[in-house]
Length: 280
Image (tube, rainbow, N blue to C red):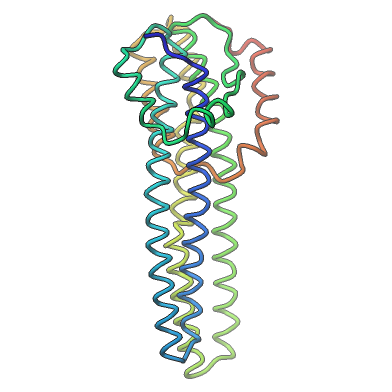
């Protein structure tokens, strides 16, 4: 069964968009839960405290549901991306049962998938085969490495800002607070630290940086594969390492691709025009 590349690409892109929306909403709800936890420290009325706790519990379950849906959509989008790389790069056919299994996993409808199709999803004009798959991996790695770098910068900025505010509050408050006020501030500070951990601000920043580092050597490996005549074992190992780096990192920071795409498209076109992707 020949793979309908535009349909698969559209469904994959739409699924990634859905995962990003769920990712954003899950983060917002998580932030709201942390805010309620901090606010509850200042509330003396027991009934109001119970109401806040009940609301926080409801929001926690809402976050859990959003997080599960996000992970499901992300997993299916990554599956579609893997299938698209192999089918578009190596060509050939896929068994009908396997293709139905892949497409049945998408939670977006075909109409949404058609609307998300991008004829220029891959810039390579090579014939199908090892050389095309190598170039698709190079292109994917080129974009992913830079997008993860931008995502890491965004995440580290958030961590530095939140950590800086926390240290500033701590240093300024300890000198003027006494007794119960200091104890109250200590509880607020503990809640702030829980927020930093709960939001995975530090962990997210580290994960983005690790993904960028893992992908930074991809182009050198692509050059080596070209020089060796596209050995299949090396190519499959590179494909596996790329998938591992991308899928092991969080979804890229919201809005980063949309803002950076025009500049990255220009850089990639320049890269191709200089002949870096045409060797071999």
